[in-house]
Length: 204
Image 1 (cartoon, rainbow, N blue to C red):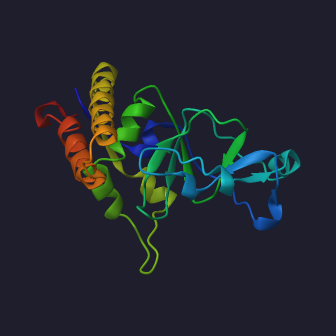
Image 2: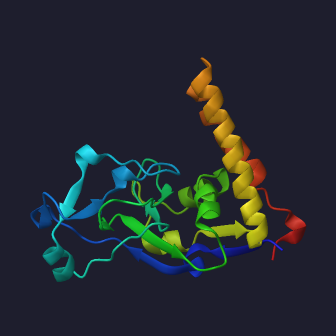
Image 3: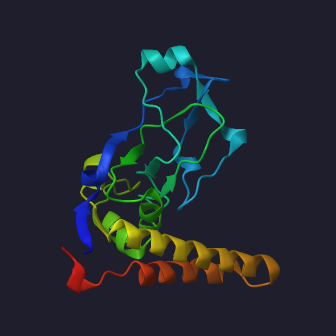
């Protein structure tokens, strides 16, 4: 059966990153992952813009280390709520206060949630809870209330494998033809909506 739970109830860790001021930063040490590193479903390395803090600062501020497989969510635009799985980084890392750290429990796969967080259904839920007239954002509290719809683990694995194959095929087509990436930008939400569509009779 498919289930619906709010995001915070699927997490072993659900916390904001650390408040790091410019005076706390250094030229090397522990990597500070920022909102600009978080793209829609993927991590942008942006090594030329990398920021760091020292080990002493990490300990003094009692920072939270982020690890491979964690999901980071940007609570700022553009768009609000975009997310990525943290890859293997060469440096120990933390993240900024405008990012929320998600470490999931065993009910849901990070790869499934990463795809779900690119879907029209998720983005629509985010927009219903954003605040701010000039610069929109979502609070961690409101982010935690976002409903997540998910099937059993075996079905999650099947969906992820199917989406991986579909998007890999599209990337191959784009790399070998003159087709515009604009076609891809319209196609991706449609594929996600179709594959993540919930059989209403199975929702609990």
